[in-house]
Image (spheres, rainbow, N blue to C red):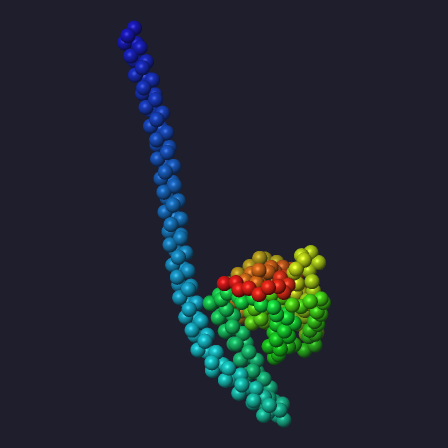
Length: 278
């Protein structure tokens, strides 16, 4: 009898040991998987850090190159403008000077985007008039016009907002150039400022064209840096638009239909106390 009891106790102890061993094996396997996941996560973070380091170095180099290019580019712009005036009596030759001016403006816009993207500066918010930013940007699109294209502007209510004039000018220039590029002859670009109907204290700027529109599969990516639907696009224009809007504590809405056009609505806080955002 005693031997039977001892055998049962031994079997019970063995079963307990076996169950404990099985649980330990499961926990060990789980621990191994967690270690593998952590190693993969660490490797991915190391790769991301290396990518960020390289991007930062590239950004710094791009900014330096852009500054070096911009100085002679300014001289080229002045000389091309003078050349246009000198050739006013010779239309064929003047047309060539106009092409030079257009090329210089295109390069200058590209450099402005590169500098803004590479340096990602903070914004110094102060009371500005959105009409100034829009009119300045429109004046910089000269040379990109198309035959019969109409530009309509409408300013309703107060156009004063809290903003950085230089950055907003660049934002609108990118939007206008994109719209003009998307328009065919006899197309229309509509620019409208109005108070928001849904959000008090918000001013909206609508930029709408009836051009070729954006493919639906690309619409979610248009604000990604270096993504472009154009064969020769840099993919920085709309990325800058998104960055500037976010820096101004605003938001942006976009809708588009292929063959019918694109509509952007930029929402910005109305004028208030001056402040700085870094």
